[in-house]
Length: 576
Ligand SMILES: [Zn+2]
Image (tube, rainbow, N blue to C red; front, side, top):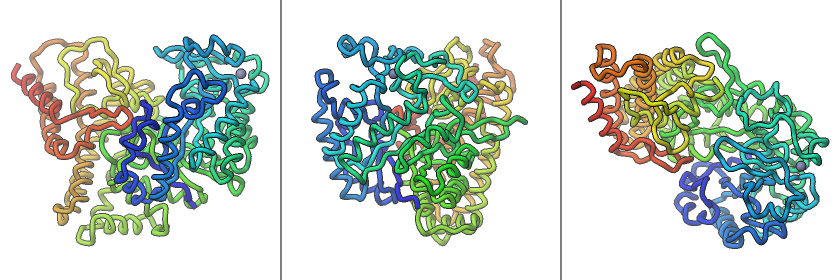
């Protein structure tokens, strides 16, 4: 049970050539910390052709042997700490339409995909002999040269890859209105095979190559976005896979929560919502005793708030793991390319939830956790009550709404975001990337109204603040303890981030049509509230550089300097 426990090194940059520099980023200390936290695997992002270009890409790729050598070395080093190395891939990965490769290889090209403002990409057709050979031989050579633990494969959406990768073949199961999605596959070779067969054959070709070199290595088929093709639990894809293939499902995606009097569908990872979704339960039932099951989770943070090391939602973690133990899950991937701090209450909890220190009584296990983590001197009952209070506050967090609040809300950087007097036209930017602050939050509220979001955030932040007070009181006897200091600071800074977010929305509601610089009483109250909120967070943010840092962007989204600027700016607003 829970044999494979995969984590990630937070200093590795997903968007750069992370394998080439992996032995610098994955220092001995970091590998040891991951291992000592109870994990036995780490994952990195890879592109097959950049490691093993083979005949097909030999003349188009540079540094592949350097990369492969670094990877082999990382595998050796990680093994010393009991860590297997897993690669996350989206194969057969397409290439930009302008790439010179296409001048010579038109015969294996698939559909052209254009996502937003990105350069168009041409898919690599997996129904051609050349691509099939490239996948099987490429993975065989990769696993011959590096002793990897396995691969984790996404085979729908994300980076354009095979000919169905950006085709909405099942429109009733896919609500994303993005116009980059095709409704039909334009590849004459793949269209008659259909998406289920194409996806299953890509996974099988990769598996064949891997097993020929390393029979014990594992292949994880991640069902991310298979709802493009068919209804969950994706029976017609799963049943075409070898029984050895591990199925990894998103634990929370598809769950229904009630917000503002309506049911909303969770379509992301969530700590606020414990899950499992009925979608995940159906998958567990489908594979029971037939093939290994993994869960994709994020145990420290999610897009709900990613710029603190963790959120104190261990009640949610307990419930997730209780279910995973019940269905005898074989493993989990515990992070995305963020949420990778090792020194957190959540990681400590998951280590125990994965092992023999488990107990079917929720409250009694939480009491055990409180004492094991903070020491016997604390008020364990009070700590557990505070954890429940944090969990209860989550029922107001604006989940659903096609993830617009998660992806475009300002929560990750709200502590630095100013309360603008005048608004330009710029919509809010992507919450996980470095960007200039936007003006208009409408793009972050689809399916909600601005007033609904603001009302929910108000209730949420008030409820979270009360939980913080309970937490501080229960931990008051261990204030000198480093763990207590860190966890309290995290809960407080998270609460201040939520409060700033609430203030940004309620300020916008009041001010969106005003451009005077003289504030009315209600506006002054918001500025005063925000001033005191940023002042509470500032000394804590000054003591720990993890606050504000987003590992996906590899950028600190709020800093003491920016927060001080905001304080000066807010004071000026009041002086007008
Ligand atoms: Zn094709």
